[in-house]
Image (cartoon, rainbow over all chains, first blue to last red; front, side):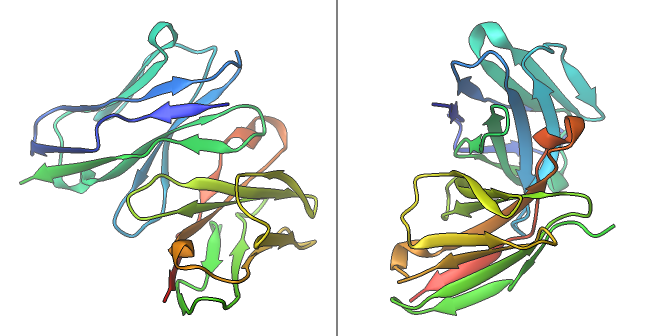
Length: 113
Length: 115
């Protein structure tokens, strides 16, 4: 069985600060995919990134970066120089093959102007 | 290129009633998955349809059923509604072709309120 843990329920930071959202996953499979989704108040889940289990390279996309460490089963997400538009709920998710997406409980991020 | 669409946007029902939610997948996608997201929780997998058949199912009772049509669109039916069925219902589409099969695109969801 798969499991995703997002221990941070809510985080608030002042605009322009950096913030890291933690994600820890559990799976017995050696081939799997990890995802991050953003859910603004409108409710739609917006895809941010997909990472497969064989690619541990960190990735940077603008102000977003992701740190994947198989040794600690973690896939953390960092926003640099946060902006008010980054305020949302962020979900980490795990997928094995064609199986379902298993989501964490989400982290509500509030950026204070 | 239209993304995933869902209807209706909002729905209010009373306990014991039945409801049907609809989803049209993204163009080129052949697989539809349904998720239930209770307030303050992460989405929970209900089931997945591919080639008009239910392929996988999460831990949901038989009151939850679905269908996929030849054009790949899908319906989620919930019978004998309970207060606990109140949630945001999300539809996700994906393709089983090549590398694309691991990325799911989500629709805006249907907010169901059971009174």
